[in-house]
Length: 66
Length: 264
Image (tube, rainbow over all chains, first blue to last red; front, side, top):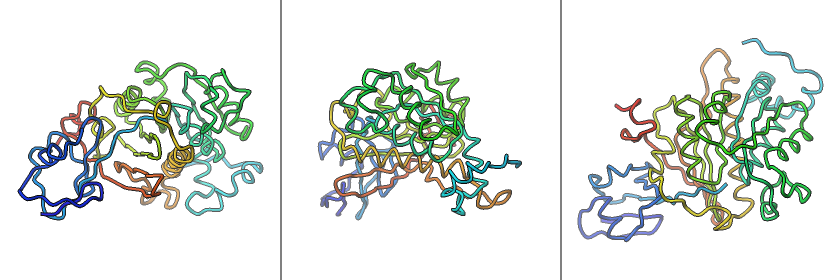
């Protein structure tokens, strides 16, 4: 199964959830928003969200400056 | 809706707005009757307030407790060296009024707090969050949702800028849904740097969203409202690739700010 994280392709060998992917990729999830196929996924849904072939994941780091 | 006629000077001053069918004379009259609250008069607030003032938003309230410093002048284009040490809100108000004395500008030099935000937000038609810290961003979001006042929230750091238009009357998420961790203060412009034109682009985008919102239904008055704002879409700008990315923010039904009332 092939997915994309921030425009980088990634091959997944087994079925995984969004939470498992973020953990496996050692992504610090503090102050980030995670979107799946253009829609931001709330933290409470990461565990139950299963990834599918062709999914696009976008990580957005919070910025606060102005 | 009955509008006051524009005088000759206003017809000339705002002629470039009036010439566009999307704004026209009715839209200009709406702008002149509008009140926008701008919180933070730094890199975002300078361009945002400048475009709203020059476009003829009739009442601007500028909130910033900070004073101008030399390192601000890289991006905060309303100020000059003679303003260093003086309150940004007052200096910005003076600068905007020199350019457009046809509008009212009020400077508030207190720090935005839960208490003063209630009064300030209640008086405004629209709020622009141009602040430099997460804590105030959460407070502004809370006040806007409590009072059901639309909010254009923006932030920038390095070469990255973010913008989201939030309407408490709509079904999308709020700032709290977007970044629920309130504990961590991410890097800001002072400690991580900021590319001046990036914050300019984002601040100008806030002004554009504001003008589009305030002139909302002038294309088809008394008929179908044309909503020109991308409500609930986080727009993220990468200043290195000059690429905009748009992500939809659904409501988090467990959100303490917007979730309960609108939970399905």
